[in-house]
Length: 425
Image (cartoon, rainbow, N blue to C red; front, side, top):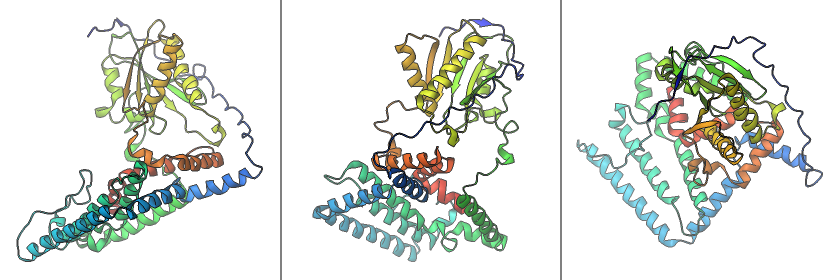
């Protein structure tokens, strides 16, 4: 690989108010498009209120999935017979396991947890009676996974959605969630003489208060920005209503001529790539002699409800390139996009190629999608009914808040991100 030319480092911006443009006031919110009927705002208000109660999940989509599954299963006697045989086989396997344990043997467990299911890592789950409760739960989980598998005629999305919802329901009754059914909780209770239960009740009350009030917790001291996270020195060299552009000066005497622009996602902030110095991507780049620029997106408010993807492309990426070209003139830029930032970067790069704009030297996408035809389990939350729910919620409050988005990601790995966390607390 050919190394890029070297140059002396650019003068670090002083960061004065004269060099950082003032915040551009947001555009006045446009009037809502004419409704299809005069009472449409009433319908949207009701839907938005319901969406808040269901965390953006459409009851119609859930009911449609269950109805589709039940109707197709009801006319499939062969599948019904197969499920009865599977239930019988699971029961016999569980009975043999329990009987072997009573006889003092140590048989192999008939059901195995999923590769990401960490609820059963404590050694107590290998001992009676906890191992029997665990196996009974996993056996039921195995049967429901088979019951909600694809059926001829059943829409694939509905099959996946019923399986997903059944996993959520089963996770609520896992023996790991109950103090008397979880050996780890019992061990901690004996060790602390019950103090862990008092502390857990306090955590529960605090969590419930924050959820009901939709309050954002302050950043813990263990993750303080500029002290623990985002410690790589940088200077804001440009700011508008949508983003700030941060410049990180290289740490070497001679540096690479072509700068790097990082485009992070909207949800995860720029410091996801600048954690502690030991695992900071940005720190590593500047230590290799790169001049790094990184976008820091604003947290949108209701006043910015009219922002579009074009605003992020033009006032975000293209504006950042213009500023970089002024700071480092005559050099092409290596662009790196992470997650949704990579999706936006791919769109921007495509339009630049269309328009004959050759300011990019290279484009690197990390954990980014450009084809959403197969978006995995996220598609469980997306259909016409779901999108209408989200649109009405955003029509009401102007944006999607952090808890409303994080809940969807947590639900995909609920056994680890919801239930295991609740048990630990």
